[in-house]
Length: 174
Ligand SMILES: [Zn+2]
View 1 (cartoon, rainbow, N blue to C red):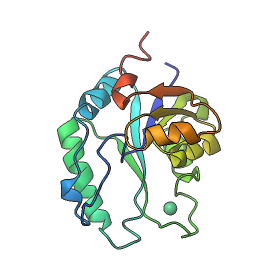
View 2: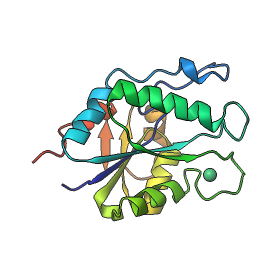
View 3: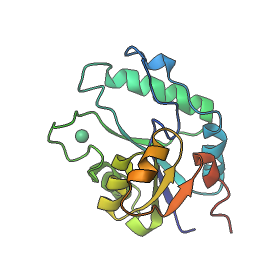
């Protein structure tokens, strides 16, 4: 199996982007295909982790408990429980974990004792591409969320181009 660890961005990759959510995470909805896709990857033996910027915490829009509750709801619906790597800081906060910095990806690799070559980062944004590149991990661009805009902005083609995260299922079998 080439990619033992699959690192997944959240917003725009697994759930609809929050538009006018009025600081209420309870309105966020996963894409209908996310649960089956994540279960398929898990069943095929991949380890999954969420790698997500949540500057709404630094901005005071919601708390880390609110985000935990959201993830519990998503994971219950999906039937999988990926480990979560989350940057709660804002832009300019001086942290090393906010994507496009590679801190979260590197932490996930270390936790899973995974080499960069055995991991894949899946996301819809330039920040995801940057974090993957910074950590030496292949990047799969999904065309959901901001993916179509990102496709036109990337300086290098991604390792994989996917209509949605569901296209990953069955991609690595055999
Ligand atoms: Zn951070």
